[in-house]
Length: 252
Image 1 (cartoon, rainbow, N blue to C red):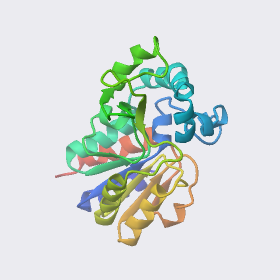
Image 2: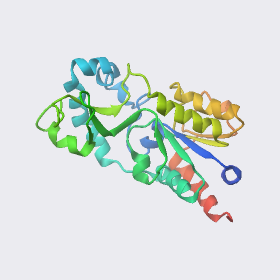
Image 3: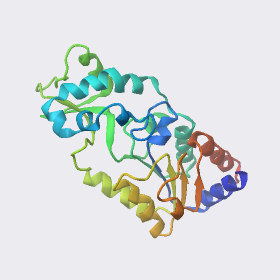
Image 4: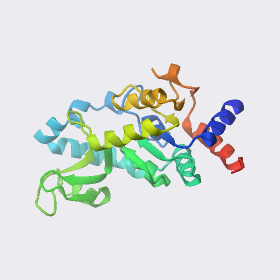
């Protein structure tokens, strides 16, 4: 694999605008289960009840019980892994312009990445469905021990996480920013995404059509593997630090 790592690092050094596109696989290495596949959350919890906006509006207490008992303890204990830290270091070195992520856990920011586009929103921010007041997740957790669903302190409206539920449209501004990045990048690193959820899965196609180099790092094969210049079926926490090490040792 040394030759592949060396080639990828050389391509990154030659590129002017490098971006990453990350999926659930990168956070699974921190201990957050993926949604689909073996051990996925949706094998145990019905997404049509826990993650559907129509059901949330009918019975928000159902989601919030799940968040308090399952989701928050998971998010509270995890930390960024070596893959998150490697992408953040690449940005600090000037070799990574933006991370576009399908994840809602905020681990990229916690790792130190500054330019992050969250395709599906974030659980780190909680908003009021009535007045749009925003709260950090940590401020809402104590309320859940006393009241489900939690209510806004300003207007008593129902609170919700700032994520995209099933049944909701993606934020057009976020989509636009992501596709602008894919249009102008000259190297794209896909990390831990199965590349089956659209429209996000179109980003590598868009970048490749514009002539960008493409590397896919994912434990399992993806439908886009044949498009990539490099495909590595290993854990990102092993691969990305190897690439960063070579970037560090390269003359500036």
